[in-house]
Structure formats: C-alpha cells, structure tokens
View 1 (cartoon, rainbow, N blue to C red):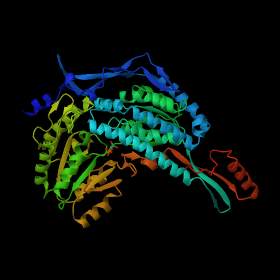
View 2: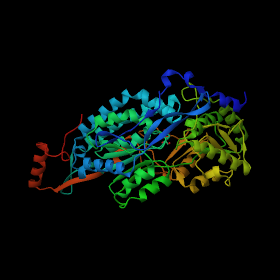
View 3: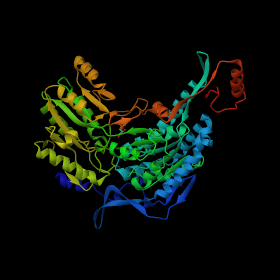
View 4: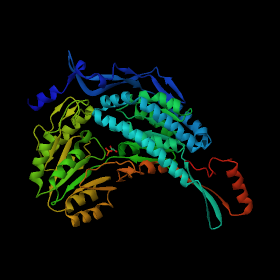
Length: 541
Ligand code: G3H
C-alpha cells in the first residue's frame, strides 16, 4: 500500500470502533454553570465535529460529537456578577472559609470528577484526537495535580501559622486571594492546563470564571454537576462561546482581578489590553515557544533519535514544550537524518483508540493547510522532505514531514509550527544555535545533546540566562509538575508548578502591630478565642 492508501485505510466504520471507546449519539449541551445553577440556554449552539473521520455509506465524514451554547455578553456578565458577589470584596463565604474547609470542597470535587473519568477521557480523545493512552494520562495527571496542590497548600498554611517579631513589630504573614480569576486553557491540554490554574486559584480563596478552549469543550459537560455540587454558589462559573463575544465584556468591566491564560501571546495581549485598570489585573500566562534541540558533535545518536521522536512528535508535535527545530552538527547530519527518518517511519499512525498509535488526526482542520504551507515554503527555498511520504495528508491527518536543510529564510525557521513538521538545521559552529536562541522572541526551554562534559557545561552556562529549562540529553517537557514551568520573553508570564501556582493566585499580606503589651493582648485574645480566619495559629495536620 502506498501512503495515500494507508491513510485512507486508517478510517473506521462506526460499527467497527470498539464499544468502550465510543461516545454515543451527539450531545446537545444547553446548560452552563452560573451562580450555583445549571442554567438552560435556548439560543444558538455551536456544533462540534471530531477530527476523527468515520466511514459512512456516503463516504468518510467528520463525526458530529454534539453542540454547546454560544452565549452572549449578557450571560458572561451574569457569570461575572455571581463571581463578584461570591467574592464580595474578600468577605464572601469562600474567601472567608478556612483553608481546611476549602480543601474539603476541592477533595469532594476530585472524588466526583473521578467518577466521570471514562466519559471525560473518551470525549478528550474524540474532541482533540489525543490517543487514548495520553488522554488517560492527562486525566490522571490532573487528579494527581489536585492532590499534590492540596498537600502543597497544607505546607504553605503550616508555614504561615505563626507570628514573627522583628525590630519591635509583631506580624503574621499569610497569602490572601486576589479576587475574581478568569481561567482559559489551551486545546492541546484542555483539561489539565485549565485545572492547573483553576484549582490553585480556587484553593487560595479566589472565585473563578472559566471558558473552555475553542476545541475541547464537550469533555467538560460531565464535570458541571460536580462543580455545582462541590462549591458554594458563584465560586465556579462557566462561559461558553466565541471568545471575542464572551471575554471582551468580562475584561472591559474592569472586574477581573487575574487572567490565567494558556495560548498565544497575540490573543493574551488582545485580552489583557481590554482591561481598563492594568495594574489591577495580574496575568499568569503560558504562551508560545520554539524550543530548539542542539545536537553537538559528541552526541549519542541513539539518545538523540529517541528523545527527538518524543520531543517533536508526542501528540503530533502539538505541545508548547515540543522540540520545534533541531540544530545538528554537520559531522552527524547525514547519519542523524537517516536514523531519524527511519524512526519516524516505524511510528504507528492511526485512530486514537488503537493500542500502539503515536500519530493521530489533528484537531484543528486549518492546521493541516498551514503545515502544508510551511512545507511548500521550505521546499521553495531549497529544503527537502527527507522521509518517505512526509507531508502527506488525508482529511485531518498530516503525516510528519522532516525538512532539511532548513535555513533562516524559510518560515519554519522562526514560526511555531505546533504540528508534525520537523525542521533540521545543520551547523558547524555552536554560535549558530546560540545566536538563534538569543535572537528568538521566545525563551521557554532547550535540549542539549552531547557527551563532552566541557561543551555541555559551556552550553548550560550560555543558555540558562536565555531560557527557563535546559534539558541535557532529554526532550523538553513541563513535568514533573513540582518543577517550575515558565518562560522568558514571549513565552510566559508568571511561574506554574504545584507550589508556585498557589503563590501566583495569591498575595502576601501582613497584619502587624507594635510590640506593646496592650497590642499583644489583642492578638492573644483574637487567636485564643478563634475570632479571625487570618490571625490564627491553627496548624493543619
Ligand atoms: O503545551 C504545553 C504543555 O505545557 C506541555 O506540557 O511538556 O507536559 O507535554 P508537557
């Protein structure tokens, strides 16, 4: 079979798809969560089609998964009103609740969420084409993240359960919430990268409005009741629909205190600029990147190929941390191309539920055309597609294209491809990749491959002040979630990790008094008689 025939043969008939991976008939979602109620929407709906095509009598077609509400600015503002009054200038029941009680609500939510695992994982697979194994990992990683965040909060709270006395001043220092947080995650990790901001924001006492990404919306439906039942009224609210329509009124209201956004800098800049009080708005942003892999002359090619496959093609290269350009020393260039192309040829492409599948359909149909444009542009400027059938497409599927040699006049040299196109740049002098990193608008991570200790040490020292993680003989990645995840320049604002996220959604606040006996007596009484949630020496066990 040639590649075109192979790609056409990937598509199943509905009846041949194993029962346990099915999502059933289209879901027509009318409900959205505002003010502790699942409100019914009777206006227009957005239809959701899967990137997974199925064979029907009339040919292969994108499977209709369902539809969701296209709310207007009025519903968004109603959600905002609820979030603002639940916060109530920091005096609402949620920000005023003890940390232990907030933890109990989040634990209850996590229990209810676990009961919906199958529905969420299957919809994740169908909505964004993520393979079943990775969809399960995304769900499990999220639940683990919730548990780890709770533990980190207990540690943080224990460390604050004491008074400090310095230079005649007694003070208690705790972290206090910011207010109303707007959370927006990306389509490649629609569940995980929404929850890595939403959960810590909630645990710190903020109230939240969240909008699912453009792709990866229906998977939230099974969780709406859990949000409604686990949290007090108005603490968690959802908005659905066109970003411009529902997000602009929220931002222009001036009542959003923090924006947690993972996506592109273009969109985040547009959103934040609409806020009338920029100093009030705190931004926690995970943005684009163009992480390079630098393969030095002493690199072990077996390691380079293994990590480059993971780095460039896990979830079809649709990770902000993906390796998006490889600089290969010219002494290894030919060998590397041969071995890398061979490894790509061995990857299994197919439908997300197939056991060993690695390459799957792309969720955004526009990306197939965009990636083809990048390949054609590179070819026009002298690059070749070095792997068999690289760049072949079929509906939403794009077969990986290894492009070499890539030069600075090609679009793929600078643009973040966010898909299975792998540009390879041969180099002789390490200054070439180092200047690339220094001149890049991005500064997230880099991978360095080599065995020459002196050279690696030199590269580490040159790169640590340009990016936020240097990976040695390993692909770029965010995990483990206890490690700080951030970037310089256009790649991020703020740092996320289990413990950092608790910090970014809160602010250190002090209650202080001069060390006089009368003041001490006031503090003593407040603490002993448990009159304040803030001034307290209670220790969470
Ligand atoms: O898309 C960006 C993600 O933060 C990447 O996360 O390295 O865990 O795949 P990951």
